[in-house]
Length: 512
Image 1 (tube, helix red, strand yellow):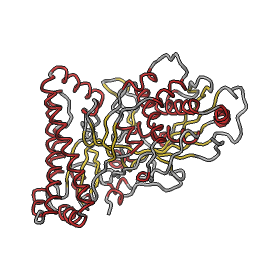
Image 2 (cartoon, one colour):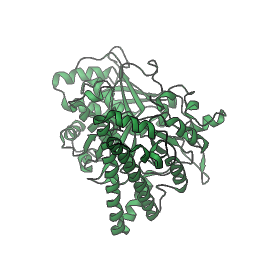
Image 3 (tube, rainbow, N blue to C red):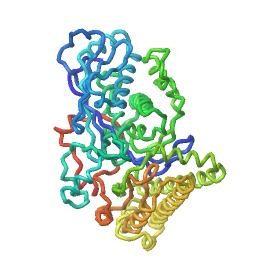
Image 4 (cartoon, helix red, strand yellow):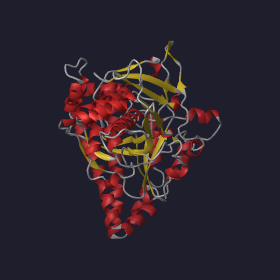
């Protein structure tokens, strides 16, 4: 490594899980996860031009974490001997996801560097770490602000907000007690994207990995550096949230859109231990050298298809409590739950197969594919069959219809599972919205992402039909977000996104 004086900027995307809700928690069940254009950015640079010489010099490094959108700034001391990190500012500024991402990234450097590099690392850290964190507007709900301004619930209204707009807190009383202020989010996996961006930026800044641009997704042959980022970010995220989830959100933040099968939870059991008998660098080295058994293959939507996300504004859902209820149902009625599980697996596999077939048909028969997609984008699905008047066009129409039928079956089975478990996986209000959406011209799929609930709905549309869908959603009190699929994972950015004019525009939701 060489001493770093320039800022390093890394970004990582949010996610939408379109199949695999609940099933993805257990190996070898798979899920399809799309990464999005909404990204978290982490900017790392030295706090001081020269090594800070004070009472802590040689023993600890100063770390400053700034979140401009939250108007928060946290100061930490990172002990360079045992790598503990201590917040020395207000406890309200603490963020455990960021703390573990920093701690484990520095531990990775100590674990993998030789003596000369460790000395250089020590000097770099004594200059301090200044970390700035920014999240795209797509991660947060601005519905209340739009309504207060008297604007319509449309993407155009969202586009009026400048990039990285300040975030308001929901403060209220719950059953007469004070409720901790909470940020209204849209369910794109902000903690996973943030953890990944911070880990990636620090790892690159310290010279543990050498990342490429976030736009070089397709050219990446050697993923060894991304694998390091994944292991560090995945471990930090799991330890920070106090449980080992499926990990699809972190994995998609690192590698982008994909078909995903989870890793075995015991891979990070050493990092979960409350009292470590071994130094942290040894723990992290074991995690880096561990045989991670998650599976991922590249996947993205077929050409001329768009991802739409809508915020119904009905209220949030607690994913952990819903997962707990489903697990309880599995134990209480193993036979029925297993049957539902198997049927869901088949339906998920069928949907994935049809989407992959459409991608294949686009590659092999582009003219016929493009013609069918453009025509069907202006028709409701019951009229798509009219386009199947030639064999190659019939293949496209049949694949479209097969995908739609598979999605309808998935929704039916998810509703059945929710009813049996007593949780609103697809609540009646969402069912009405989704049914209305599926009947619109050019809509291929519509559903509730991930664990379901009231948080969001998604749609996959054909050609130029997105604008009409967002108008109908607006009339149904659903705010279409300025978010689309972007299959790229984590990577470097050329500059601070605030000065680089990175922004979401209305056109981004309606690609040509």
